[in-house]
Image (cartoon, rainbow, N blue to C red; front, side, top):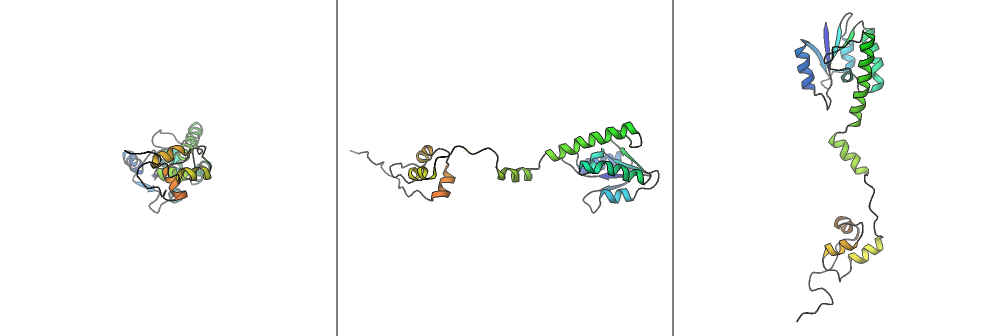
Length: 185
């Protein structure tokens, strides 16, 4: 009997893998995340069964799990079959290629980040900070009553922006009006 296993990834969605199972007429398949695991799928195997996956990397989450996974399937008297390539784990040359490609694909999966993980990593840091003017010098410019416009004050404060200056020093307390030292007629 042919039994399938589906695990979603950013590259190959669960929907595409399920459609692939349907095209290959696999009626019994396990989908990770719906209270089913790869261990459940392997436990269901019997002597002579085929354990079908789109590619071998879909059956493991980590590269270190790959050799043990094939051993477990073979221990049950079954064989791993990749539906996209047609390779089988009972052929030594196919098994070696399956494992090598699965290693590469799992490595790629771990390199790519989700949007949420990228944001989390971005909060840790990233680009080194610009050379920033000393706090005391920046504070003197921030509260200088001769500088009426905030953008002019920020322009003189190297490495500071409005948000960081406001958070550090609070409101400027400089009122709009005629610049000091200029006379009107």
